[in-house]
Image (cartoon, rainbow, N blue to C red; front, side, top):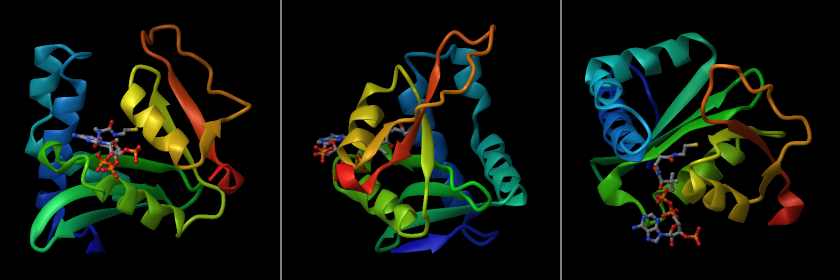
Length: 154
Ligand SMILES: CC(C)(COP(=O)(O)OP(=O)(O)OC[C@H]1O[C@@H](n2cnc3c(N)ncnc32)[C@H](O)[C@@H]1OP(=O)(O)O)[C@@H](O)C(=O)NCCC(=O)NCCS
């Protein structure tokens, strides 16, 4: 069951986000940077998104929190798709993405070029690289690419 994140369930959302983020970033970030992303940091990050026009949703398998996703209500960016490491490969990511897509007209996502698993996942579900890509910041080692949704690719 997918529900909106609010004060009552934000800790569940922050915990899933923390575990999934740590797992997916452990190869590309320093141990110090990983450690900084504790439950308080993730809670504050989600709160900040909500304050800045994002709706965040959490998926429960019965009572177990299994994944989160965010939608920017102003420009329809779909973001923060994170499934608990132990629950990946069971369809929850697809369920969350379909849920978000059903609430958007012209959504986009950005993904790190190194995240090949997520890129394959999004491409299989109708996303293609955007024609206009964000400028690469001088100090950024890893490029974040923008993808737009084209339902005809499904
Ligand atoms: C990318 C991600 C959201 C996908 O969520 P998920 O719940 O694993 O997705 P699903 O189970 O719906 O589908 C996963 C796909 O991988 C396959 N798969 C099989 N075993 C798997 C496993 N152990 N783990 C992950 N995927 C597996 C599934 O069959 C499916 O294949 P398909 O694309 O051919 O249909 C999830 O892997 C994740 O949270 N990754 C870390 C965070 C991340 O990178 N987020 C994206 C940031 S932009």
